[in-house]
Amino acid sequence: MFSRAPLLLALIVLGPHVYRCGFVDIGKNTSFFRMCVEFAKFQFNQAQPDEYAYKLLWVGRSQRKHLTWIYLMDLQMGRTICKKHDEDIDNCPLQEGPGEKQVGCTFIVDARPWFSQFTLLNSTCV
Image (cartoon, rainbow, N blue to C red; front, side, top):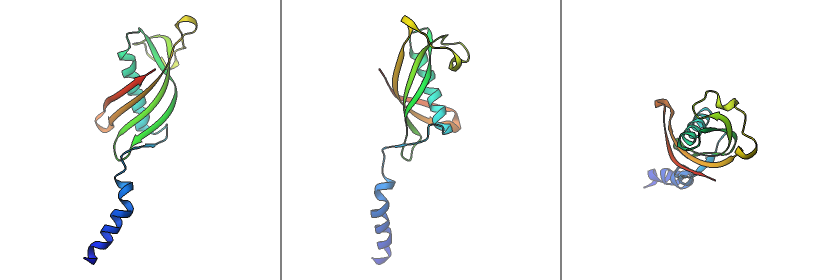
C-alpha cells in the first residue's frame, strides 16, 4: 500500500498538467509553426475562386495543442496584384482602391513535418 503512495501523489500533483488538452501559446517564429502558416496560406489561396493571390500581413494568435502537433493560428491576409500561381507572392504589392481586400482567418493545422505532411483541420475566414 505505501509503495503506491508516491505514485498516487505524483498523479494528483502532475495529473492536471499532463492531461491538459487545450492550446498553449507558442512563438510565432518556431520552425514548425512557420511551416503550418505557409501551408494554411497556400490552402487558402487554392480554395479561393479569386484569380489573385493573398499574402500574409500579420500573425495574431499562435498556439499549439498541448502534447500534439496541432497548431492554431489567426492570420490577417491581403489581396495582392499577383496571380495565384505567380512566384514570390510575399513580395507582391497589395491591391489598392476597389480591388483592395483583407481577410482575417483562423486555421487549425495538424502537422507531421518529418513526413512533410500537413492537414487543414479547420478554417474560418471573415
